[in-house]
Image (cartoon, rainbow, N blue to C red):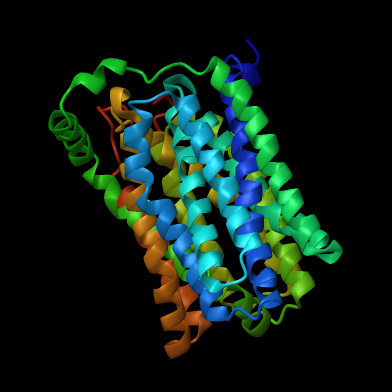
Amino acid sequence: MTPTRAVMGPGSFGRLAALLFFVEFARCAFIVSFVPVYAERFAISSTAVGFAVSAHFVADTAVKIAAGYLLDRMSPGLLLHLSLGCSLAGIGVAYFGSMPETLIAGTVLLGLGVSPVWLLSLSRVTPESRGAQMGVIYTMWLAGLGLGPLVTNLTLELGYGVSCGMLTMMLGAGWIAGLRWSRTASAPPLASSAFVSMREQFVELRRKLAAMRPLLPGMLLQMASAGLLLPILPTFATQSLGLGLPQYSLILIIGGGCAAACLIPMGRWADKYGHATFFTIGFGGMAVSLALLLFAPPFSGALFIAAFLGLSCAAVFPAWNALLSRFVPAEQQGTGWGVLSSLEGVGLMAGPAAGGWIADRFGAETTVTVSAAILLAIALLYWVKPVKSDGTERRFSGGKP
């Protein structure tokens, strides 16, 4: 069996990865590029746009536990089609409406629809290729995150209808991939769990979550550190680093491209040499990268730092989520991932508000400093107290976890 075949499995995971790309392309393009520009057509205020974007992520996070619970008890294909239908409805409501309320309703529907797709992807990761398959998932996410807004900015020059039609086509392509996947998708791992009382199931889930207490600081703080940077990155790049918008865009492309290119190989190496080793080093590399940016390096130096930051992110994402997957009960994949994703979402929701407040009071450089300090603290925490799962994680063991 080839390495690619071993990672993707018998075709089902590959089709699900393609679906995730199309959905994330449409979601990121809609939220990041389409909504802010389209709102100007109807003189909708920036405050309403900001509330619509926040409402999208709140809905995405809030529905995860319920969506995970349903995933464990109903046909995954049916849940997928309901989700994609909700996503299409969200784009339609936002496009054909002309009021702040319809814009907010559309972004909320899109958040409700996208959330189960992530859970479906995470729940299909196989134990023997945890890190590599997590690398595939995050590669698809990064590809959608980067290409979606870029392509939408170009299509907006041709008109709002053309741009919205392109987003609809991407969701339609995802639906086609979902149709092929749902024909090969199996039922939830232990369908008999549906006959166990909800109380008994959540007692078992709580026991699993209690075992992963050492990972909770990392779950909350890493997302909070990323959220801190969201409101201030353009300002920090232009004012503190003295970069123009084209230079800033190139830095984002270099950093994101390096991360996307390295995610799958990093995931494979993490499977081989130990997940805790990789995410500990990765958190440290991310902290060092942000700290170096505070010295206002020249443009060539900033490009190198961006590439190193992307490499560090690639070391963290697949290894971290592969270790998290060890604590998800096999019979409650959907519910377990829903709870974990919701916990991470709390950090992401709190970060932007805190980052904006710190920047207004003390400057954007202080926000970057706080973010770097949080990442360094996470790295030191897991260096001093390496995370173990059933005694199988050993730092620098060189053996398979």
